[in-house]
Length: 225
Image (tube, rainbow, N blue to C red; front, side, top):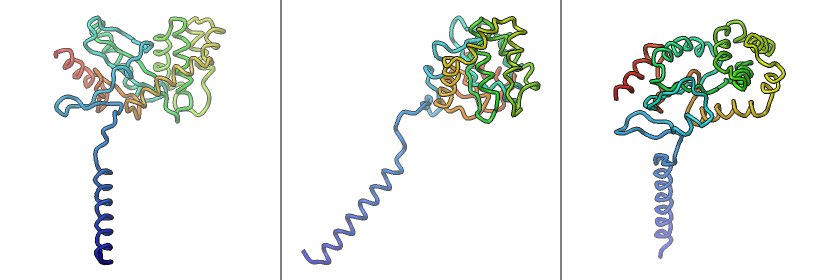
């Protein structure tokens, strides 16, 4: 074999290697992700096992399980506070026809978001999760978007609800409570939550402004199937 032939073969081999590497690099990722493509190229669906855990807080439960609305929320988030009345109206309107699930997703930049979630969780240990959840939103202007701790404010909410205060404070600071909130947050991250509020209706992420009418339209469509 002549030197020129050897050089030509070497160059050809390099070119093949480079082309192969480029092709492989640009192949679509086939690994299993948090969401799977829907039928016929439809919207992606998040795994039900991540959206609703056995210990997830169901604010209402549909007997037939036909429609489930999951909200990942931050109690300090103004947009969540704005969506809250519409969600409550939908819950009242649909009663036991639709399952509504609340998942915590405190945003790191909100000073009191995680503490607020822990307060709701701690109140839930005494059967007062929903009353505390409502107090948080109804009084959000009093404590939200502030760079100071509102622990005393949340203790005041607990007193207003008539909770056993030593038990409430113990639950508020318990590692199990912290872990419970962070577990919801981790699930949210896994299914692609990037901001709050984020709704999933029958596993499909809702897009657009989560107004009462917009959410109702999707719920009605799902109920009609």
